[in-house]
Image (cartoon, rainbow, N blue to C red; front, side, top):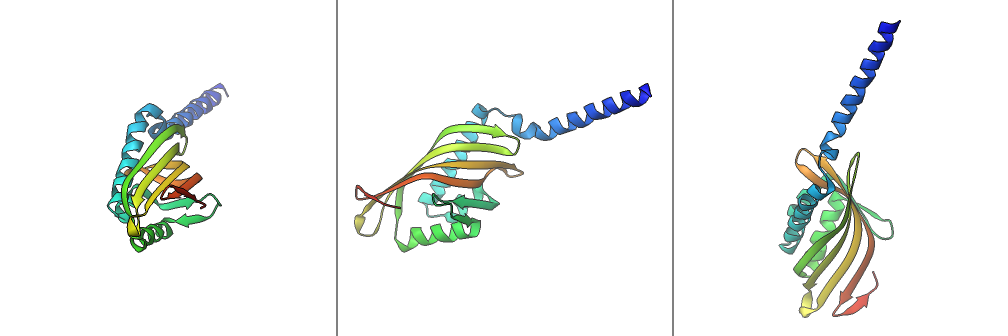
Length: 168
């Protein structure tokens, strides 16, 4: 009886150790160590958008990526790519800058949550200036390819055309 109890205890400890090991990849890195990695990914995404390379920008997204706007409407990865390809080309938008500023990183069992601000500036047909300021809460998942954006929920958004606020 006592042997069985010891055996069960050791088995439980073994399972606990295995469960800790499976969490290791996410928790093994501190938020401060993740900051430059995720900031680098945002920088690569933004650089690709400036080049109008939607495929390159979304290479940092998971295949099941979901974008959620302020109204709660969702776009999957294919819809997101199509939308931005159309917007950048139909309106002849030339992005001059796009910068993500990470406000907070929070590690959880499934990945990391990132609160961030995004400012994008550019010009449109006729030289009209456009400035978009947004805040979002993003979820990044660890994949074999590295950290990839799985979901982005826009919290606030303001668009200005030639300095005047346009209601989104």
